Length: 310
Image 1 (tube, rainbow, N blue to C red):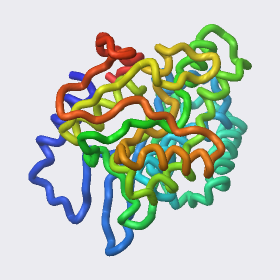
Image 2 (image 1 turned 180 degrees about the horizontal axis):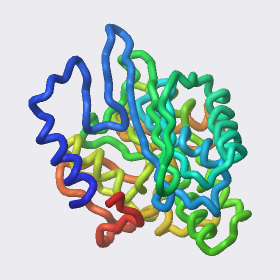
Image 3 (image 1 turned 180 degrees about the vertical axis):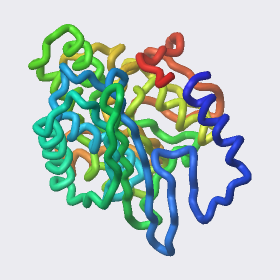
């Protein structure tokens, strides 16, 4: 059973449970609308040996990343992260110095974005480090961006060049621990200000963060919105030092993927560059037919993501 088959399996078993006002499975965050405002909730787990290796990642870097990946989910909804909860399971062979360095990395990023740590849990692990972070965001209800809101004709865009994290992981596995790309993999920077700015733009329809890789994540928007897409591989921005395959198939970049009204996309790109001093990248458009990948008009096979959770 693959990840999304498992999620659908869970969803089927939970269909009779009350919603209690929440929008649940399907987006980067669950949503609770409260009048003109909304709260959003997300949770991510990081497991030693699956999401990180202890000998390639310092505890401070791991503290940063554990929080960053959750803040990225909130940013993808178009609102500000305001609070987090941390649950951590540590094996016996870690000393107090490791735990202190981890918390320093976690709280440094929390301070940077003015996010409160409001609770969680601690316990012993018999096999490896296990982390779980729950993040809460808050913002205007009208700022919310959901995966299901892509419109036929929308322009597809990404907020930054892709592939640096996948290339960085490759450097780590080759023992190049001090490579600049390896540092980008270990300490991703969530695009919080970018996400909030895009949340205020009515021409932006659907949005999500790129955690599993473009080849995988773009399909989530298409499936949730019941649309297709035409994506031109030649237009995908590639991070310096990465390959085009890294940019298409690699994960953990934590940049944003969005759709916007095609009539307003050019102005959106100009305004984005004026605000953030870097470009916004159009990479294709939303269609009414199947998901199609091509290069300069020539059809190509669907790319295979590097990583599967199961």
